[in-house]
View 1: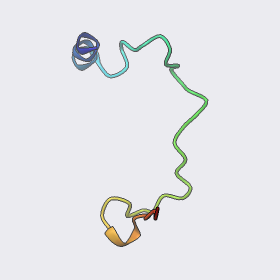
View 2: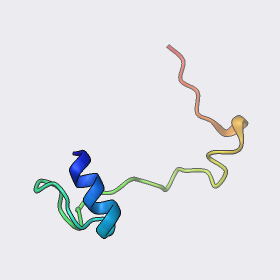
View 3: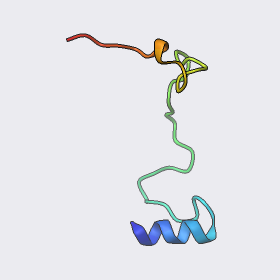
Length: 50
């Protein structure tokens, strides 16, 4: 994996990738519920109780 990282660093991101990863996947991260301040406002973090 380090060789792949070295080549991509030198030649550009995505030049070499694993065969199982599609260039344009059908899936993606859902962003509809994400706050605009998701990394800066501690009061907006979701808490889960057990």
